[in-house]
Amino acid sequence: MSIRSSAGTKRVRLSPEERRLQLITLGAEMLADRSLEEVSVDDIAKQAGISRGLLFHYFASKQEFHEAIARHVSTEFFTAIMPNRDLSLFDMLRDSIERFVDYATEHSASYRSVLRGPASVTPDMADYVNETRGAIADLIVSELPLPPEDPDLARLTLAIRGWIAFVEETILTWMVEKPIGREDLVDLLVESLPALALSPALIAALRG
Image (cartoon, rainbow, N blue to C red; front, side, top):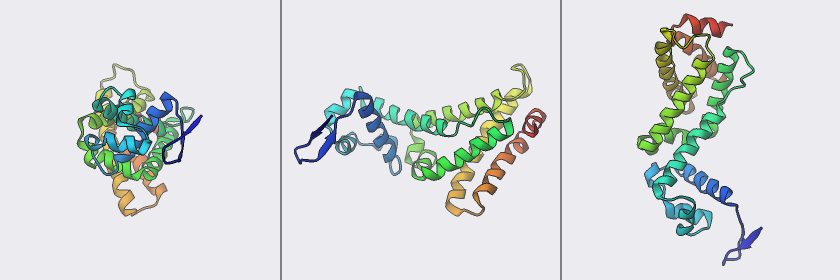
């Protein structure tokens, strides 16, 4: 169902779930040039064509709204890079890296903002980014032929967390300078994981 505003512009009536997602998405888009705390409730309400008061019908507070934005960005990214679980470990890794590069390229403004922009120093955003890094590391480790009690597991998990940070920074630099092609970038990132971890189990698993 649709309604018209006082200016005569046709406006679509959204369900509560659709409206909530619209508000969160608008907030996520603002992270391209401002910190999470600087995402204005008034600006969001204006863009959505609703009153400031109605926004707080969907979120109990400004803090809850900001937390929802941070969670949305983190979840969207993690979902986007999920590989095809039917592939071999090496192909899964390459598939995920390709998705990573494509997501960062297609969402370059928000990607830079989350990692290096004003939003990156926001505690809520930093927490969700760290949670996402941990989830990626856990996903990789879960595919390795290592028992939970393996003494190499803690070392390997730490190395993978460091590798994820390397991937993020390398992609950021690549997007600005483009010194190599996309396929060469993917090769570099995939090959760097076993080289960094120096884990016989990981190297063997990736080589199949």
